[in-house]
Length: 341
Image (cartoon, rainbow, N blue to C red; front, top):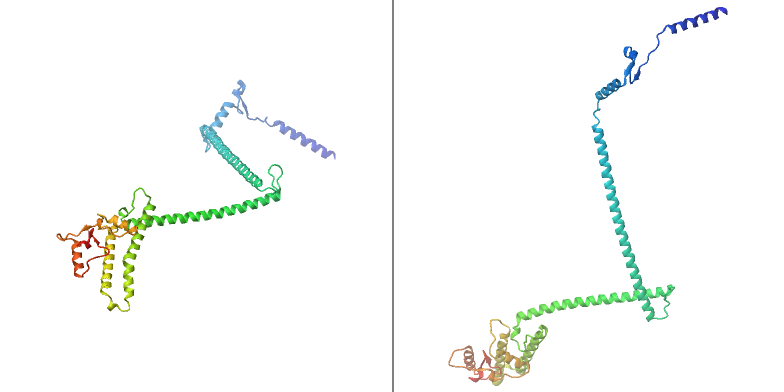
């Protein structure tokens, strides 16, 4: 036991001696200034300026490390980005405020329009209620629902009736428009076919409708005159002799030729009012006008046949003499009276 204790004490003594013999540890420290002793022996002392210089030299040699200007440029770019972002936000806010103001204005206009329509409906219902008492509608105060429904049905029926009337009116307007177009087309055709300005009764002060009506009256009068004075007697002679035409009386035969030639002469003269190649002159208009009144030809309106000078009337008169026809019911040809030869 004593032996072990002695050995332990001896080991502790030796260990302490060895530690005592080791040199004192020195550490590196950084100082702003050095004393005279430290300047002489400053193995573990370095100036702060030297350390900063070494750090700056080491940092400059590192890859991707440069001067501080890019940092400044990045800061400037960041400021520009912030500025543009702020401008964009202001523009967005301005647009949103404009849209909000516009929608609010439209909303107010819609509300105003609805209020006006409601007011008009109330006035219409009030007027209808005044005309039809007992319906149960009360606009001033509480409104009766059954009466209001009845009035709505009545207004709906009136609306349907007005719609049908409007459709009927539109149909009539369309028919009138078509009729007017047709009339304009017919009127233009009449102007192309007839010499309207040369017809009896023409007057510039008259309307186009009155002029066309006067022209048609002349046409009808001439047709009736030709039928009564020429065609009707001709048909009567033909009907009387149709069973034995070979034994027709010579006087009736001469009368038939007279009627046929007179009808052709009347129609020839009437063509002067239709064909552009035939010029209207003399007393043609007056003679045609007299036919509208059912009068016969006035001999004073005709020229006497001149047998000394050649003319169309003279040629016709000589042909009539060859057929032994002296007098004609309508003896007019080129303003000349063929019966006065």
